[in-house]
Amino acid sequence: MAKVTELALEAARMKSWPQQQVGGDLKIEIPTSAGRSQVVVVSQGTDGDGDSVGFIWSKAADLGHQDPWALLRLNAQLTYARIAVRDQDIVVVHGIFDATASLAEVGKSLFYTAKAADELEVSLTGAVDRL
Image (tube, rainbow, N blue to C red; front, side):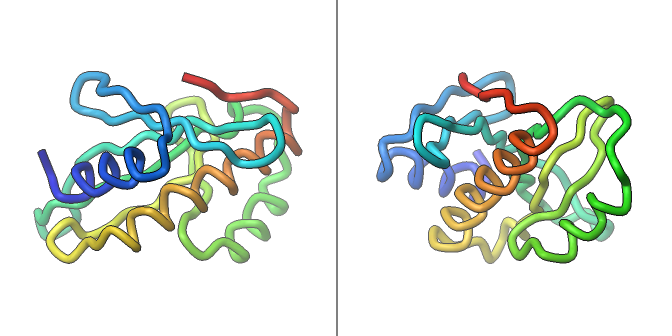
């Protein structure tokens, strides 16, 4: 198991966030606001140099007729993630270099990716995301 995934699992256990392994991915349900939560996925990949990277991402909405300029403006406000398109989904995603990842960095990325995706989901659909 890659370091980012191990650290994400540790953070989830420390916070009592429900988690499950699905194939090579770790899914974690993170409370975001009163009565809401967001499923965040931790998956492994590589960067342009072939080094191991952990991707922390969460679906916010189906791709549709969203205002791309509004999404780009929101992108500029995010610290721990960026808005992207993955298949037919709008997601919030953050990549972390596996070799130097820390528990604090992964924990913050998990929470703030969930928070940003949930806020975007509410503004676009109003839906609730659960495991």
